[in-house]
Length: 409
Image (cartoon, rainbow, N blue to C red; front, side):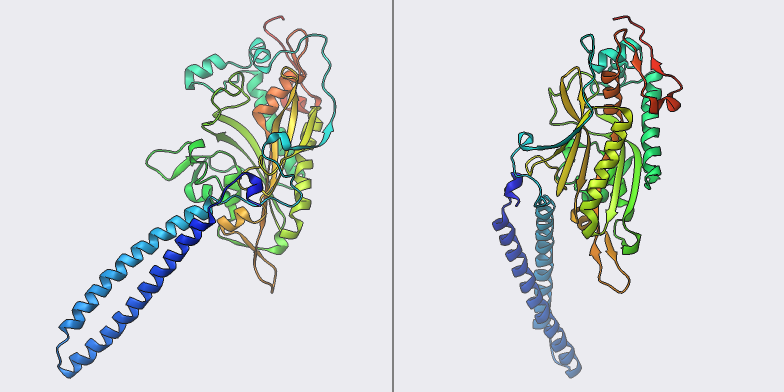
């Protein structure tokens, strides 16, 4: 199954490490038993008034050997733990086998591309013409891959986040506003560490990292806890800023705001019983889709193949929105069932009354990426005069029906 994900796992090295560790444990236990016997003999000799220097020397040697063995065992424990943390989740049987995105399977589409009587502009041109996006000043403030929203652009970003959160809470999700700094234990539990350390920002000299996704905080809500099965499913959501180094993205999407070091996202998350998690995954996808439908944005749902899934996922659907300027779909949401993978790493269990505990299943989904929705609206609702229509569902949040252009096209 791991091979289907394009991952080579050296189990022979793991077994060799485990054998050596067991040998050290056996040797240490043997020496501890010998030390205990020597201690008893020393006590007997002292009571009898006999000398015990030879046994005292032997006890000292045994203690030194035991200390060295314990240090070696601790090193083996670290290596074995590192190995286990490097193993990805296993794919569900329904996931198509493939090596990359070309093997993904389109599931369905909704809507149709907008028809223009002009050549549609990319979002960065629309935003700059309307005076609502200033990438030059963002670069002056922070460097490349940052955005500066202005006026109605800033209001649109805020309106989208509020619209998403209102929709989710109406659907039974409990809203959280978590810290944006997370510790190593939280990142390890969710599967971000140790594998993706290079893709995140760490505060030097601390155990804190800038969160790459609210999935981290929401998973850790119940880290090292046992939930009552009757509580499940638990549905939560959160808006956060997200921070990513984009270490492997050199040369990709260098124009505009599609790929940023800092962006806003609303995350949906579920803790479920194992037997209900795949039903809840389909529901999670529908919750994300409903937002795009209300916004009137053309999209498709894609089932990712084994080679394109995330490290922690057993099954993932990507939702891709249509971008007219590029004449292609781009990801705007990713919805995954991680089964017990994150729960096992994070120690999250559920237990029925009078029954045995089991690991919960965790599910996560973007609901939605705010910046990518922002740019999709500009591209799909742009007008010939450079203005941008505001979808009806957002007008109560925006207070306007359109965003005017400062520069005539």
